[in-house]
Image 1 (cartoon, protein in one colour):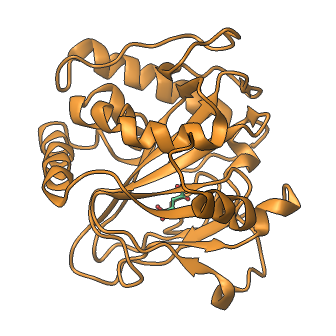
Image 2 (tube, helix red, strand yellow; image 1 turned 135 degrees about the horizontal axis):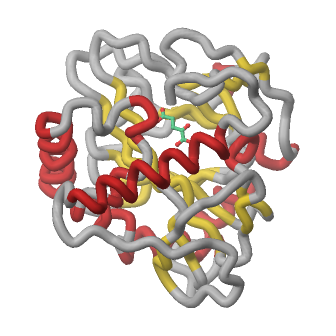
Length: 275
Ligand SMILES: O=C(O)CCC(=O)C(=O)O
């Protein structure tokens, strides 16, 4: 039986996302926030720019979220029982910083094919219209890949500032989440987010993405962890899960994985951004 209800499955099919889904308590979300902020304080810069990827490789609490059985039950309803984690991203918007995310489709530069994969956006803080929650262009996943302009623009939290132009923003749906809830979105749904206009941080921990074992990385090398089921395809190298916080070898693994990611994200581009 599917963990997602038939209405939720229909929402995903029709709109390209499903939200909100309760995962853990506000208290747990706070504990995770504290771990993120502890890392930021201990190793300044570790979670910034290209370091914002794959923090689950150095943080036992983020590893626990990545392998959370409720999240995996929901993901299984969409991509089947053999699930790999091929990366995570921290999308943090600090107050007084000009961070935003232009409208884009994840599938454009991520190199994961076929599209049997899904992204889980887990709210570590509340996420709402005031602090720049994601906005989804409902139904846009049905049109396949769209043209993206590469803007490399100031404040844009995407690698290339990749932008789908002329999205009817008033028709997009805000993904309002309480800390501890998540949304799931499709590889080709167009989405973005505005500035954080509050005086607290907005933190999203994004499993980007959960892929079926049948999904290849066509732009480079992606280390993966088995989250559930079996991997009879063996397309990717398996990487370990952390046993303690900020272990020296795990920090090296994170760096190596993130170097590989840079190759993937900037494949074919003669310009590089800071993420
Ligand atoms: O956190 C955001 O505002 C955008 C995140 C995003 O684009 C994604 O998770 O694919």
